[in-house]
Length: 349
Image (cartoon, rainbow, N blue to C red):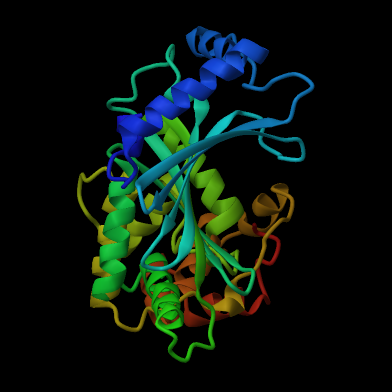
C-alpha cells in the first residue's frame, strides 16, 4: 500500500486500518477477501480474471475529510452491477480545499491484499483524468517503475511553472487556472476543472507487458491525433519510442518509462517552436482491413504503412510538410500532402 500510494496526502496508516477493518467485515459475510488472497497465490497461467460470480464490481471507498475535530475517515462497500470492469477496486477519496473539487485515486484491491507478488522493480500503468464542468473528460496514460504519483506531482509543477508545451501539463494549467478564478469569484467563462481521478490500471508488470498495455490504452483512448480529449501526443509503448527516435535520436537510452519519453518530447518541443497542439484536421480514426496494407504499399515508390502512420503522427504534433518529409524520407512534398488531405492511403489504419 505504501508503494502504491507514495506521495499522496492521505494518512496511510489510518487508511490501512480502515481498509483492514472493512475487509474483515466483508469476509465474514461473503468470504470475498479470502477469495482474493487465494487468487493472488495462484499461478498467473492457471487463474481466470478476478471476478465474483453473479455479482457486480466490488468497490471499497475510503474517504478522508477534514472536520473541526481533525481528519475523519469513513468507508463504504459498493456493488456496481453495471460497471464494465469486474476486478474489485479501492477508491481513496478526498476533497481539495484549495480548488474545492473532489479527487479520487483508484487502486486494484488485489494489489493491497496479501498473497500477491512483490511490486518492487515492476512497472505500473496509470491513468490521469481531468474532468471539466462542461462534461468533457481529458485523459492521459503513462507507465512507470517508480512512484506513479511522483510523476503526477511533476506534471503539476511543470504545468504551474509553464515550462512545458506538452498537452497534459498545458491542459492541466488551463483548467486549474480557470478553477482558481472561479473559487476567487473572478470572471470565468471557459471550461474549468471540477474533479480529478487517477487510476492504476495495471500493477506488477514486466517491461514487455507494461509496454503492450500502454500502447493499447493510448491508441484506444488517449492518442491526441485520434481522440479529441486525449492528451498523449505520441503513441504508447514501443510505437511511441519509434516516433521519438525519429524526432530526436538518443543513443542507447531505453525510454521505457513515460517520464523519460516526456523529457525528450519536452526538449524537442522547446527546440521546434513551430510544433504545437494536435491538428484536429488529421485527427481521424483509421479502421480498415489489415490486408489493405500489402495491396496499397507493396508497389515500388510507394510509402510503407509505417511511413503513412508516422506522417499522420508528425502532422498531428504540428510539424510542417518539409519537416515531415525530412524525417520520413519521402519522395516529395506531394506524397506527404496527399496523405494528410486523405487523397491517398486512406485504407491504412
